[in-house]
Image (cartoon, rainbow, N blue to C red; front, side, top):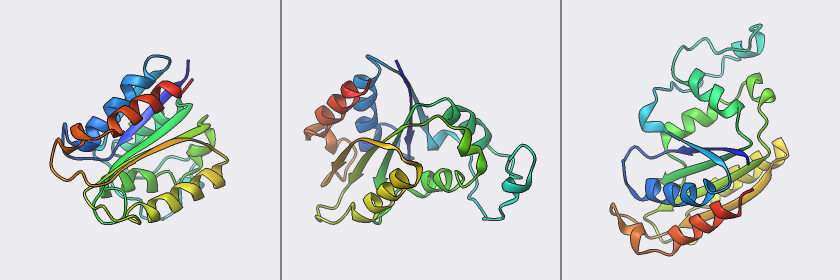
Length: 179
């Protein structure tokens, strides 16, 4: 049994991204301890790139916000899943703030071995996820992480649209495959 943390980047409760993440969690929680971190519930400032965390003895950030809580949760994870709506060819800004704050030596103490990706877009363009997938691959390569899988959903715009999409079953099966 592993520890999985799902970072949900949507501000909209019970929206398409939430439903996709919950389908994954329903599958993954059969064999794993799974925790959802919803960005809507945390106050995280953006990284300002000062690098002071590299100079502090404990590598802490000078910003005192909820990222301290998130660091503690991520440090215990064997796997992280990024779940985000795609508004303009990128992950949500709140989620990006968390990802950017991982530019810290604290991440060197994380035990994460796998990364997963769940994305939802209203657009149906074949290239709508390309920029995110490039960043995702760069992170996999840099940290030598295993790609645990991806569920990428196009054409779900209005709240609940995903309920008519096979992606919920795909996310559930992806979750079930994680051991």
